[in-house]
Length: 329
Image 1 (tube, rainbow, N blue to C red):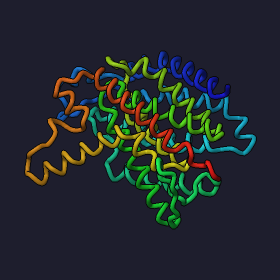
Image 2 (tube, rainbow, N blue to C red; image 1 turned 180 degrees about the horizontal axis):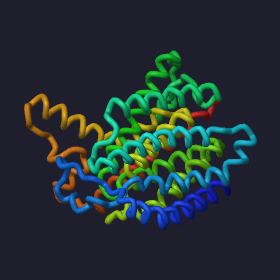
Image 3 (cartoon, rainbow, N blue to C red; image 1 turned 90 degrees about the horizontal axis):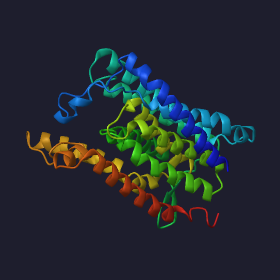
Image 4 (spheres, rainbow, N blue to C red; image 1 turned 180 degrees about the vertical axis):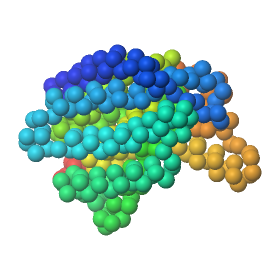
């Protein structure tokens, strides 16, 4: 029952926040700047309000404040830790968005600045979750139901790499109307189902709030988008996704549930690498993958439906792949 209420509260709070915040962002001229090297057909989106991730962040925060007290008083802080971890990434994204809006360019923090901030947040979160018993250094392999022990220092490096990589992969996926929102909705439902199945309701309440906040945000973010989530939202969602995976001690499940994030990121890496190696040749029409498909005639709505549908399928399969994680514990 608490997860249903958490969803409803987050949905209502985010829907209301959108009504209030979007006009404010317009008045502040917090519009998105489109990269000159980006797709020319996106230039019509120039000026659409960004930083819209604040909408679902507010919704999730309200739900956690209203529904999380039972867990907090019982000493269960998993949901709060993941929310705060994601919020740190959201703040990094907000700073990045702020500088973009201020300078009226699609450049904010430098890559090294973002990397160091994200790395620091990942290390602190890993230590915190380890000290509170949420993390083990047994690396679980989904589908085969096998775990193997690795030394803590190695696990820390692995965790930091995966967290920073996941956060930036979600950020890359946020390239067309509603895409990162739609893909992350089934991922949040997957973590909700796992938390419910394993009776980890402090994490289930949080995952339900994320799903509710994203459902409300989609009202404003679906094509044609009235607002973009910006780095504020995409980095926050990246923190949510990797934070829940590690809090539930199943980080490798990020491979199947995040298959779209991975495909988008790999297409970008492959394109840049091949371009440099061949001195100007390209594999994709344009990277990341969603732009390649757009240039092949796919509409933004089709991309949203196909990528979200693929994620639904991989999330269902992933639940089957991890459901026996604690069967014999």
